Length: 143
Length: 143
DNA sequence: GTTGTAATTGATAATCATTTTCAAATATTT
DNA sequence: AAATATTTGAAAATGATTATCAATTACAAC
Ligand SMILES: [Mn+2]
Ligand SMILES: [Mn+2]
Ligand SMILES: [Zn+2]
Ligand SMILES: [Zn+2]
Image (cartoon, rainbow over all chains, first blue to last red; front, top):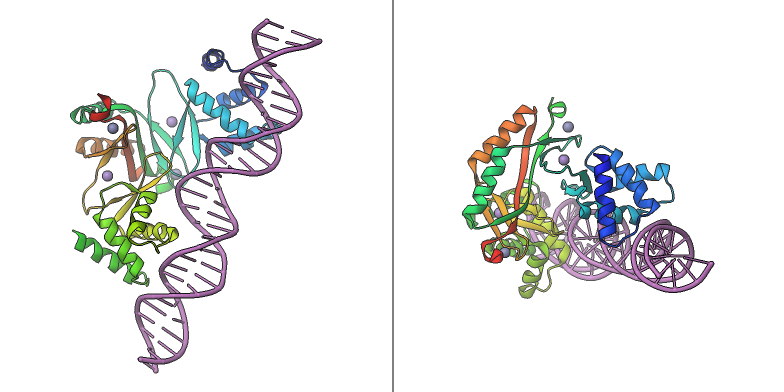
């Protein structure tokens, strides 16, 4: 899983004529070891603890490359912070976002996905991506 | 419909101890006369054509008030521009967004809404709002 | 209508996340 | 090892939004 993503990324780098660098390796290792949905700032701060020399711009640039290569996905939960999550081949999910504590749960629902396709069809619309997020209070916070 | 929204807003203004001003009236009239999903900049530019003295900050502040009063809703389609749409009592809809031409279609699907509730229940999650957007190519653009 | 007071306005500066710039450093090819 | 193109980190720039503030305005009390 980590191996596969590293492979995907190095293939992407090679195919694009880019270079394999120490910073990209460090950031990739760190990203693959993190929990999901981490914001760029969070990521940068935690990274800087171990690797103080890595620049902010490099983290931004590298995460964009991860997304471009297909191993990560950019997500926005409306708090003004871009987050990145891991992309797993053939898997898709949507999110429940707790607006009090920030907890995020993931779910999949095949019926909803199918209905989305039907709706798109009825408009002659071709879906490329979609975004389904449920905002509210998680079980812990609603008590 | 326009009347009702004007009433809602003036009640809101009164109840909050705010003032009824020329600028707010102008912006409200303009907003109520526009098509949906207009970005703030678009709104400001079109408004400025007729009322050159109205400031950018005032437009921002006033649209926020519209949202707070319940006659408008802020929406983000991920292009970095905040948009505002009209809120109609008791109505809800989600969006199809064309990533090529920017066209926006609206849809409602009771089954999807019900499934969302069931998913939330199964997580003990209390939904406050949700966001469902289908991005892709509209019928015109996919040809 | 005049006055007093608090809210509002418009211009501008500030903010915040993100992107760009650029000279120095580095990776890869020859 | 030298040549070349990419990458890096720091700092400046950007773009959308928000805060600041002095001048203006709305409105309630007289
Ligand atoms: Mn996720
Ligand atoms: Mn709409
Ligand atoms: Zn919570
Ligand atoms: Zn289109």
